[in-house]
Amino acid sequence: MQYEGVLRKMQTEFKDPVAYYLVFPEDFIHMNLLLDRGLSIRFLKYQCLGCGADLPIFRQGYCKNCFFEQPQAGEWIVHPERSKAHLGEEDRDLEYEKKVQLQPHIVYLANSSSVKVGVTRKSQVPTRWIDQGAHEAIEIVETPNRYLAGITEVALKEHVGDKTHWRNMLTNRVKDEDLFAWREKLKGYIPDEALDYFIADTRETEIHFPVLNYPKKVKSLNLNKTPEFRGTLKGIKGQYLIFEDDTVFNIRGNEGYYVALEIL
Image (cartoon, rainbow, N blue to C red; front, side, top):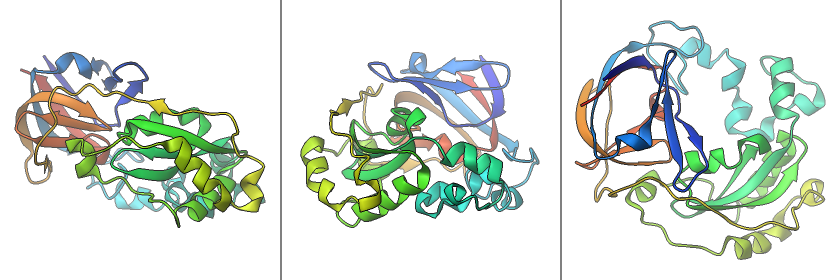
């Protein structure tokens, strides 16, 4: 069976284990059902998520022009502390920025490769943690806008990491942490503007992923260098497909790539 379309990050359901779906315009694939099955991935062309043109993808699924023009790729996405919608100031599209920035946001701790701090919209909990491959996470504060969450993250990352070491995450070189204890330790570093939004009553969320075998030494699939790949699917973690030969393929990292996917 063959599917064809532009790659977007897999949709997920918070189940035990997480359920993954690769969605195309006319159909979708429940990826969990393909474990231990052969897959072929063939790169056909680019399709920018902004303009739809067959132009090389620059970042986040966008061609270079769209990356610097689309509001969905604004600097405040990666740097929430630079959000300005709460001040009524436009970056690229004030209406869009108000819609996304002026809603509840969560500052959290997640353990994917080690303990890290992060920010996400409340509506994206626990999706964001799943996408990062975190096997445990806990909320710290819930703010009314993205800016307050952003300045909180900046303050806390002086004392804890803010990056996922993706190779460690994929090889499962992680250890359980007491995230509640971490949260209590970091409470004293929350900025005064956000301290009232500290979540007093919360607990860790545990996440289990559909992985039969973890790779011993990760090999990343680059469609520009290897436009066609075949392998046996052995797991899914974060937004990565894990294959039997230790090859991993980052679906989210290849958004905007138009591919043919065949189940062998």
